[in-house]
Image (tube, rainbow, N blue to C red; front, side, top):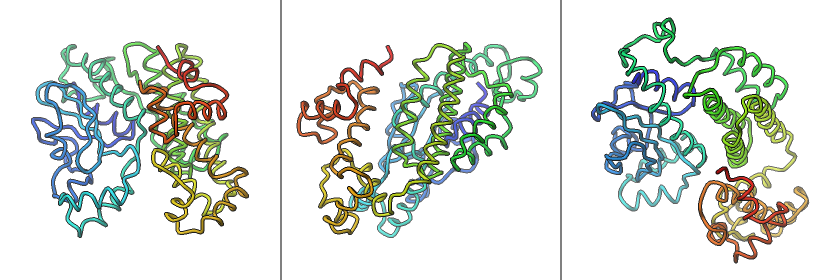
Amino acid sequence: MNYSELFLYIYDGMRLPVAIYKDGERIIPKKGRPSANLIVNGQDSYLSIQERMKQETDMQYVQNVFYEDFICLLGEKGYLVVVGPLKKGPIRRGQVTSLVKRQLVPYHKQSLLLHYYASLQTISESQYYMCGKLIQKLMEGPLQRRQSAGLDANNAPLVDDMEKGAFVFHHSPYYLEQKITKLIASGDTEGSRNVLSLINTHKKAHLANNDLRSHKNSLICDCTFMTRAAISGGVNPEVAFFHSDLFIREIESEFDIVRLEKLEIRIINEFASLVKEAKENKYSQTIRSVMDYIVSHLKENLSLRMIADALFVNPSYVSGLFSKEVGFTMNHYIKASRVAESKWDLCYTNNTVANIALIYQFSSQSYYIACFKEITGETPLKYRRRHTVV
């Protein structure tokens, strides 16, 4: 297997931090990226997950003591692919304080660690899962066949592979990827579509054994970088990830390449529109802060007093301001946000409706069902059946 090529695909194509190890030693890249373990102990991030890995398992999703998430894939002959560090949600000051109390982090490094966590790349639950599966498919599929074809798996130049017609990755010009990222982040729908048309004139990477699976893998990668572009343009991360999760689900349920190509246009339109809407948002900074706080604490007990205290505002004042600016009460916003977030659990987990109701702080299963139907027009079970791909 050509691990240099796999590294470039994950790092450049999927925009994810990755390192390749051989017998426990990092070989690509030579210089390690920032990590909590490097900040706290001056050590490579791999050492913080080594003991948590099961040696007999080819692919593992691992979280270390510093709340960082990794995807670890065992290769042949002592090779290990480690994607990360990442975070699947905000890492809060209270969690860092807990690390200090447990003597895992020196007190004087607490502030430095908080700054690091703020810059750590965020990934949604479904993207975390799908990226692992996608990389595993690449390691099991066409990349592996390079070795069986008699090629020097680790040293064969990519140019030679192209001349021989072997499996290779074709990349659109990087300047076009930069341009479309900036256009999405600026909310320019038409400009984004125009650059997408230019990108699609270039040959796509063949990422699977058949064209349909290859198109799906490519579109999932595109969806990932479009999500990050939207977030950089001002879209709430939870909102961006929610749309991304739904699109990935739709990609997996599609079996026609032409419809996948039309879906790609719809995805780019949606993310650019979300950015435009966010930039035109008329809500005050106070109300945006309230919304961000609510979205970040949907699985916790929420009350007007608690939110007001956290944001240092008067409860009566912020309640009235919220209703005036948004057009409905804060309680309704909390309920609607919890219903929206719970859709992910219905689609991607086997949790019962009763358990999901409990997770999102609904007082009972029947109340959750009533709220879900009020917001969406259908019951949770009906939604699950419509959006679950067999």
